[in-house]
Structure formats: structure tokens, C-alpha cells
Length: 154
Image 1 (cartoon, helix red, strand yellow):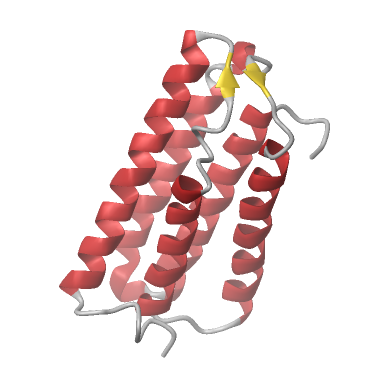
Image 2 (tube, one colour):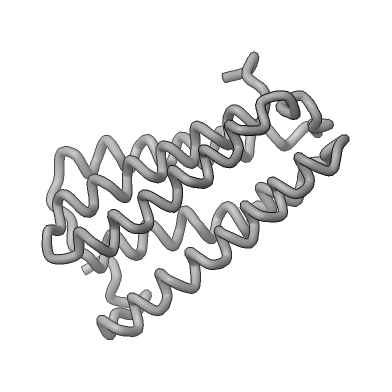
């Protein structure tokens, strides 16, 4: 992970999130379409990043950048591992997905890097916008199902 460009790590993280959402869709057959759609959007995000391979080295890193990306990536990989082994409810899946999407926004995943070209800046702005959109979708689904954060662990 330490040798990979940060944009490659972003791409991998989007694919990991897509895999997690796909597992949710497989385990929650009544919500398959919901989770599959989100998974496909995450794959689309990864493809958008991948298309700009020439710009992968166009980010100036700071001392926190790899730690933040690593923290989120490790959390997602752990959730994939757990979800493969254990039962999960739609409520729990929504709660975890919100944690992931919000943590990327709160930790300023896409804002904390200084892109050295406009292409990378545009990619990061688009990813931030798409992540905000996913938070809105997840919150709407929670509201639709009358789930709250207080009961999301039950």
C-alpha cells in the first residue's frame, strides 16, 4: 500500500466498498436492487478514477493522507470479512454504509489532498459530490424504513 499512488488507493477503496454493497445485496435478497445499484455506482467511481491513470502522481501528499485512506480501507475490508461470515440486517447494512460514506466526507478524504493538475482536482470534487449523494440515498432509505441511529445496532 505504501508504494501505490493515492489515486490507486482511492480506486481500490471504491471497489472494496462496491464489493461490500454487493455482499449486502446478496445477503438481503429483498433489498438486492437497492444495494446492487449502490455497488454499481461505486464501481463507476473506480472506473472514473482508473481512466485518469496518467494523473495518478498528481497529488501532493501530506503526513495524514495515507493514514486516513488506510484507516477507511481497513474498516471496509473488516466489514467485508465480517459480513461474509455473519448475518446482517438491512438496518445494520445501512448504518455501516453511512459510517463509511460519512467518514470519507468527515475525514475530508477528497479535500485533504493537493492535486497538481485540474484533472485530478475534478476527479476529487466529483468523488466528494458522489459520496454526498450516497449519504443522501442512505439517509432516505433509513427514513423510508423508519430506522433511526439509536436502533441501528439492534
